[in-house]
Each structure stands twice: as structure tokens, then as C-alpha cells.
Length: 241
Ligand SMILES: *[C@@H]1O[C@H](CO)[C@@H](O)[C@H](O)[C@H]1NC(C)=O
Image (tube, rainbow, N blue to C red; front, side, top):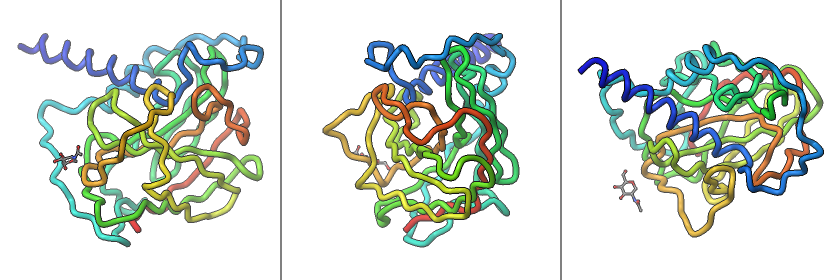
């Protein structure tokens, strides 16, 4: 019985790792290979396991209750977080970038060694928001270091399926405190980094949230406002509007 539970967890970790491809170009994409990094670094399998395992629901945890959200409701704030974010970096697919998240501060270093090039944070299980009365999310962020402007991505999920759609939006962030509005009707639905069409976000079932800083945008395109190196970003608050 116990072996079965451990095996189930292992399979979930594999599912989860494959789901992070949602933010990366697929192999068949026409990404300019000349720009691919040739640098190789040893792969940190322990960090891979420790990061991935944070996202596997515990067999003892209960399902989150659906929360009916009204415009202006605060969904998360650094001083009293309603759920946890944890790093999910390119180590999950062999890369060597790394980040940490504590007390609202997300710090990391991006490298494109091993053909990687992203760091991210994702909610750990779980919440269940009915946002059908709202038009979008407003993130209050403070970038503390780095180039004058960088382009980040936010990903929203309306399914707990590990390989489910990621509803993505890109936004440019200066080194300053800024409120970023993410309108639901401007999200780009993606699956394995490819843009899909003919789908609609289920606003009554928002169950996942992630932030990412990646070398890539969508469908193999490069992020035009990206630099390798250090990232230092503070999330002050997330609310609905
Ligand atoms: C949206 O999610 C709700 C659960 O909150 C579900 O009952 C409903 O069927 C979903 N709608 C669609 C179109 O999938």
C-alpha cells in the first residue's frame, strides 16, 4: 500500500515536470538554433526532486473550498499569504537556472546552460477561486534590481490537470513598484508553449497561478526584454478587479 502511494507520487512528479513544458517552445518549433546556448552544466537531480515534490498534492490534504471572489478582494498578500508559492525552475527539464521564494521575495539567477532559460514560481496546492464576477487580476510587484525593463509572464490555470492549459499574459516591468493589471479577456491560451484557439478561460474555476521569467515567449519566439542573470522581484499583493 505504501509502495503504491510512493509510486503514485513519483508519477505525479513526472506529470508535473512535463507540464512545465507549457512555457517552453516545443522541439518542432522553428526557434533559431544559432541562439541556443552550448553551455553544459551538471544537472541537479536533488533540486529537481525537491522542487517538483512541492507541487504534488499530499494524500492527506483536503480539496480547497470554492471561494466566490468579488472585484477588489485581496487574494494573496506577502504579510499574510493565503497560499504558498514555490520555485519551479528549468531544473525540472534539465536546466541550471535557480530561484528561491520567501516572504514575498522571488530571487534567482537565469542561465541558458543545458538549453534551459527560465525561472518560475507556482502556487502549491491549492485554492479554488470563482472569479466570474471579476474582469482580471491586479498584481502589485516591485522589481528591485536588474535592467531597466524586463518582460515577465503570468500563467493562470482553470484546471488542476498537470498538463492542462496555461492562460498566459506577458507584461513589462521596470525596476520600481508597479501595479500590473491582467485582464482575463486578453489572456493567451497555451499548451506545451504552443498557442491554442477556440477555448475560453473558465473564470469560475481558477485553481492555479504562476509567474515566470523566461528566455522564450510563445511558440519558440524569444522574449525581446530578457537578459540572463539575476532576478529580484517582490510580490506585494494580488487582488481581483
Ligand atoms: C467551469 O467550472 C465549473 C466548476 O467550478 C464547472 O462546473 C463548469 O462545468 C465549468 N464550465 C465549463 C464550460 O467547463
